[in-house]
Length: 162
Image 1 (cartoon, rainbow, N blue to C red):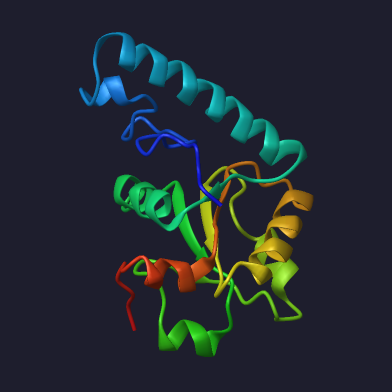
Image 2: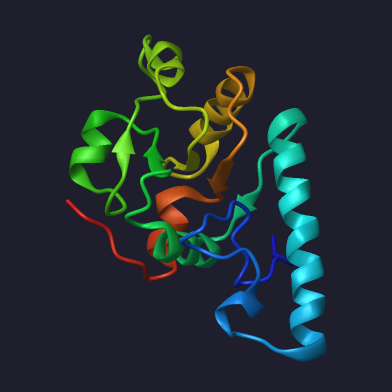
């Protein structure tokens, strides 16, 4: 499904990564003001969704942009919810794994810091849906879903690690 999200928008900004494109000099004037208003609306919407509904879905391109901005940020986690075997065979660089199919999945998720931002993926997006439901129930607010998982990531030509 096509996305209407601004490619420069990070729904969970940090001091290291500004929320609005004009803060980086990427836009100016009326365009920047319009993008800022749109970004602010999406940020508020994303936080509200995390509290009471669905988490934002990111395309592979949007996911890569978020990763580029947030890699190295200690408040950001790229979370792979596939099996250990799948994770060993191939993953997105920098990911940590919590196996959704493990009986201990919910207990492992409960140990994670709810104040951090998570970009969650699996192979195609099916297991991620269950993981996101558990995260919502456990009180995680800052969560993003990499729609289509690592399969769409690879189809977009983005790199993986082994």
